Image 1 (cartoon, rainbow, N blue to C red):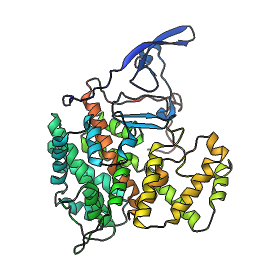
Image 2 (image 1 turned 135 degrees about the vertical axis):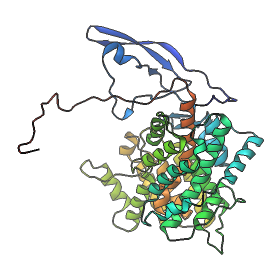
Image 3 (image 1 turned 45 degrees about the vertical axis):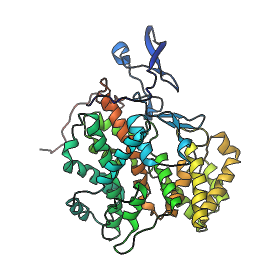
Image 4 (image 1 turned 180 degrees about the vertical axis):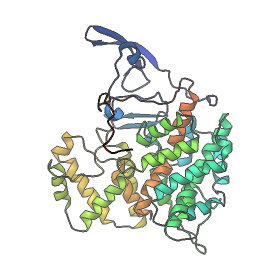
Length: 444
């Protein structure tokens, strides 16, 4: 769609490393083995069906590399997460979401001029077209914020049709800056609408996160004051959610984008995928679990006992991860940030005490150790959001704000590759064989 942009740190190319032999009865087939710069090698089955007549079957794509990517690397066994090669821990001491967004989008950290120019684009385009306010008015106040967010991101494409075809890198940068900037305004307006509050416009003097909280919580005569610890915590939250390889929502963005769909439509689809409680809603479930314990209906010890009982439907939320088989590195960072925020603000939150008790029990229980069930990113993120005053129904919206740069980076990467093609998986059909049509008696 547009020429590939230069990177200061060009990753090593994917290489072939011999072949794997697949034997089916009397038939043998040599399949290339490919290796990336890190991680497990892959058996290239691109031509499997044409050469053998067979398909591969991988329910949920758990063992399938659906694409090549240079954006994020995860080693779930060792608890490693890197953005463009940089360990996620390196962003903890000075969390800067805009800097990390640029890194994901363009493959390297920005220099001063690039950072300043990108920041100016974000500031300049925080407003939305005034007529979009009429669209907000059309939603009932009880509408889920994620449904509003998805619809409004799609609606942005109607007001910015100049970004349907991104023909050069500078045009892409403008489109990326606009959607990353405006998503804050859309999210804040969705919150204000649901509470019957007047819209608060963005303040060009405020940085990204502080501006978002201003639009959420300020009123006409009094501006919301954001503590530095809260700003850092929310910036870190957004950074830690900015990308996570080929998860459900990112794969959705790639799937939709593979059809040639524009950036707005593809990201709106990502919001819909993230809305699912098994994906973006997990930190909400953690808060609900902790609140249930706080209200006295069940102790942490009893909850853990039920979670281990195979006959119980109780699940310990915020523990375990499909990818990580050890401590989620993001959880460790959020735990430290959570302590800092609550200490700085002087907040005593019984939910944090319950969370620590659960963590203590689980990390010393042989069942959880043997099953590699460690705290994940969702375990502490909800407590941080609550401390910042974010209502529970906005948790997943904040997740979407954080994940947006990753979605855009993957959309860009896919469209830069000349070998990309529309995604079209096969299936293993298990329905009826050929069946004759018999009309219902008396049907016309």
